Length: 95
Image (tube, rainbow, N blue to C red; front, side, top):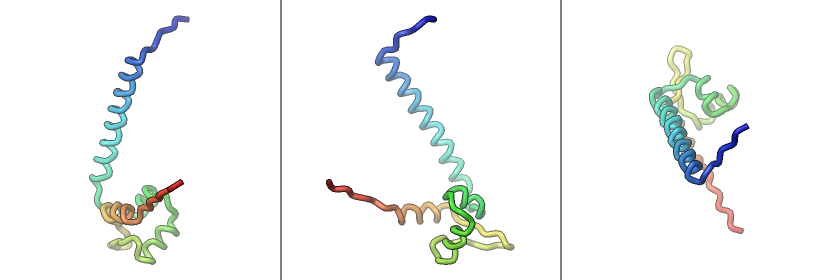
């Protein structure tokens, strides 16, 4: 069984390639998310990883605005993003 020696330059090159691949994957995902402006309930539940009951509670208490057309409920993806940012919790741990 043959073995090879890995140098720090090899590791640095691997790190750069790996980071570029991550950037590529993330940019593709961001592009896919921004293409669709309005989401159906099932898509919102998948996105936020919540149950149908939780989604209904968010609608009822006014946390999540929605539009209902012909029995189908739609949510604006930009509004969901804005709500997530507005409700972000920052902890400052001072030890």
